[in-house]
Image (tube, rainbow over all chains, first blue to last red; front, side, top):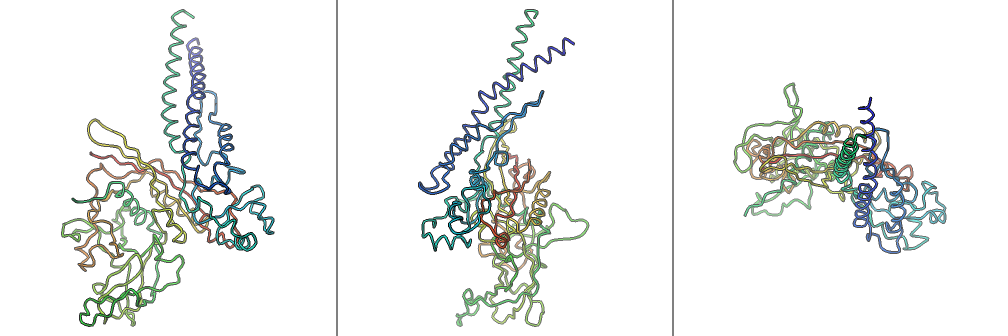
Length: 200
Length: 314
């Protein structure tokens, strides 16, 4: 019985330490990698003054990353969730970003919802503020005819292959998690040896 | 100084051939008795002094959609074999002979049953009298008296390309091979490396049903399987002009075999690990009406990801 209690204490101690390590080291490391990827792969591509600049969605993206549930605590099991294009929430205004990350085939123009309404068209989904419109869409003919050349620049990510925003995250997580598990076990052993030696 | 392809190119090409000739072998279509039309622009018939230098190029006319000669498709250049004793991992002929430079090899000859040319009376024309451009779907001959009227050919239904930009050049279904990352680690004391390539296959289908079929066929073709890493000592199967390599100088199919020799620097085959497949669900921000869905390449997408692993001796 005592052995079981000691074992439970050891596991609990180890788990708490592991959670501390994950908070202090693993999650910030993952965020740093994603931030680095975002800055090198997405920023500076869409010209200033254009719609759909990844620069304009930087804060919202990293706000959602802060809210991302990295750790799922299932009692004796801790699951570390590695964010990827499927698990991350790209809803709302970040929708077009998912399109960029999955790769775009063909040439598209970014059209705001106001333009749809102005020209008497119904947007595909009323929840969004920006839409990607193919160059051969009838809407584009009206845009050119009525609004002029303002919208004639195709979106900068048109016809570009997928961008791996989460590149390197899985490998880093696997390696770091192994290291942190070893460290938390070592710390738990050290502490339990200390108490055991004092007969506690 | 001789130049040889790097291993990554051989791996890319080997996976390409494995997908095209083994995994997607059921996705081959037949076009029968397509009319052959002389292409005046590509033909050269003006040298009366030496008629042997004249070349006549016939193109097959067809209304089939997607076009059999669109990017990544083309006519079938190997025979498929049937019977009870075929190897399901290598469903093509492997015979003893020589390749174009005279070296003895076990290899695969140019097809003899997948393309048949007929004259205007529907008699079969001797295949020794013409060459086939498998990429552009043309029959090439230097014999001005040859009566070439129709062609029956098999063609690859699924377009396989290795550049994202080429997707636009073909109608679905399309598979893009995207080899986008490499890790190399040691695996033993001494020489040798474990090479891990990260590969995504992007599938663009023309309907939801077609997407399911192609995705599942590819998944099953990779899961717990491997493919040979060919050495390509003379390059790819087809020459720069779409003809079978060596055919221009040598009409004998047994002395211009495609060399199936595996690369000697790896242990075993290229192995497929961590195979996963998912549909690519894009957000509803695309402007799309009922007619456009059919032609929109982004409408029915999926992705098969895997790691291509090999162990090298050096």
